[in-house]
Each structure stands twice: as C-alpha cells, then as structure tokens.
Length: 294
Ligand code: NAP
Image (cartoon, rainbow, N blue to C red; front, side):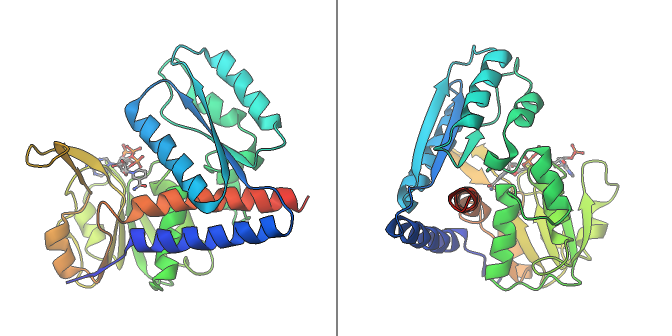
C-alpha cells in the first residue's frame, strides 16, 4: 500500500510557517500583508473559493478584502476596476476569481492585472518568468505540487514524469516546472493530453504521474509502473445519494487499485487542493516582502 502525500498536514505546517514569518514582520513595525479578491457574479463555487481564501488569509495574519461585482458588469467597467486596484498602494496582491461571466473576455482581464500584484501567477509576464526560471509568482496548483514533492523528498532528478493535461493553470506549468534545472525538477517530462494516441504507453514507464484532466477514476492500476509516485489534481463532483451532501469529490485516479501498486499517492480530497490554497498565501507573502523592502 502506498504512502500518503498528505496535503492537509503539509498545508497546515506551511500556514504555520507563514503565520510566524508575518508576526516577525509585524514585530519589526511593518504593516500586515494584504490580499484582495475580486468576485464577479454569484457563482456559488466561486463564492466558496473566495470565502476560503479570505479565511486562509485571516488564519495567517493577512488583511484580506473582497470586491463583489454584479454579473452584469461590462468588460470595460471591470477593466476600470482593475486599473484602480493595480494602483492601490496598500495592496500586495489580488486575484480575479475565475470563471468570469461569458460576456467578459477572460484573457483581456488577466492581461490587465499588474504582474507585480498577480499572485495567481496567470499573467503572461509571470508565466514567461516561470518558463525562464526567473523568480516570480507561480500558479498555485503546480507550485503546491512542487512544494509537496520537495517536502516529502521525492526524488525527481532524471526521473520519467508524465503530466496528463495541458491546461494553462495546471498541466502545462507543471510540465515546465518539473523540467526546470535543480530540485524539485531536472526530470524528463512528457506532457500528454486528449490527442495523445496511447496514454498508458507513457504512464506505464513513468516514475511520477501527475493527473490533471478532470476525468474521474481515469488512471487505473494497469496504467502504472509498480512503485511510481501518483499526484492527483482532478476534482469532480459526483452525485451520491448515500452521502450527506448528496455528492462526493472524485479524483482522476482510481485510488483503491492504484494505491496498491504506487509508492506514494495523494488522496482526493486532502492532497493537492489544500496545497493550492496554501500557495496563494506564499505568493502573497512573496509580493509583500518585495513591497516592504522597496
Ligand atoms: P482543463 O482546463 O479542463 O484541462 C484538462 C486537460 O486534460 C486538457 O489539456 C485536456 O486535453 C486533458 N484531457 C481531458 N480529457 C482527457 C482524456 N480523456 N485523456 C487525456 N487528456 C484529457 O482542466 P484543469 O483546469 O487543468 O483542471 C483539471 C482537473 O483538476 C479538474 O478536475 C479540476 O477541477 C482540477 N483542479 C484541481 C485543483 C486543485 O487545487 N486540486 C486546481 C485546479 C484544477 P486537451 O487540451 O486536448 O483538451
């Protein structure tokens, strides 16, 4: 049976470290770090995500605020709001919770964010810096996985890694980060996606597999090598009337059978999700330390 890569335990530890670092800065006479979230419309999942981010901020001693905007806001009005936020001095970082209503061009909004405050790491400037191995904000999910691999001391140098999924926020940056120079990188990375002809052919040779496709129970035991390390990013809500909430969260990995064969594995929930949340705080702390040293 595989060992568990425990995102809950690790994220608690990281949040404790952040809290201690913040209190040291406060003791030196600095202000609190400040994260702002922009929430457009009333998508319940987005509201929950934003509320969780605010809660996380409070837990580590950050100031946090939310700007709530109606779903009918025009693209131009939202761009104006972002312009104001970009210029706010008392703010270290902000996020625009995605997805945005359909009439707003997401790309245009991301492009409008000041890269120095882009703690989601979605702006092309930050994505480019990441690819060039220049210190920058990293997208929270791949950042969380890098942190997890490193804190569990999972070897990556020279390892065969397969990343399944090539999204901008998970799969593609993950493939870039694991192939970067230095630990936790130096891996030989294969990025597979929906047009890959035979995914199992690649995963069967992999030492580490990162699944980020959003297809429940996609990765089966016969697709992996014995002793491989499995990181499951997928989260899909599946109906289940036997559960109190009427659903459960499924990962991309068929956990019971894959865990029998793997050496390390992330659970869903409780694996990558909590790490993602903690990394937004780490990015905000990075923005803050840059600001207070200006
Ligand atoms: P996305 O933008 O929908 O991208 C999915 C990727 O998977 C695409 O590249 C797609 O290929 C590929 N794909 C889909 N079906 C496939 C199949 N049958 N075989 C091979 N490749 C397939 O999703 P995402 O934003 O990266 O999210 C992926 C999953 O992770 C979702 O379940 C999401 O909820 C979850 N997630 C979790 C966290 C966390 O913190 N735990 C954070 C973000 C996302 P094409 O490019 O060819 O279409």
